[in-house]
Image 1 (cartoon, rainbow, N blue to C red):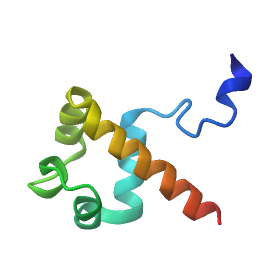
Image 2: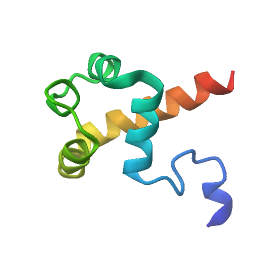
Image 3: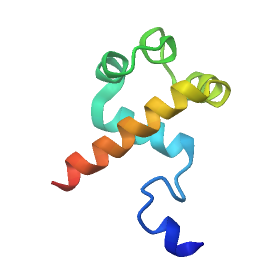
Image 4: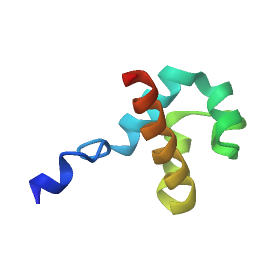
Length: 76
């Protein structure tokens, strides 16, 4: 099982860690432009974003996909 996780950039990352990294990298304004959901565009906070993302799998998927993209861009 460990071998399957070696190439998974999300392995061991909490949703809070992912959101914080995205905010540090892009800031709330750009994050809201890249993923147009209210938790990023209207009075954003990590706490409110986490609450929403845990209830909306489609939004969480977008956040995880952007995180993977960010990691790849930063590694180039």
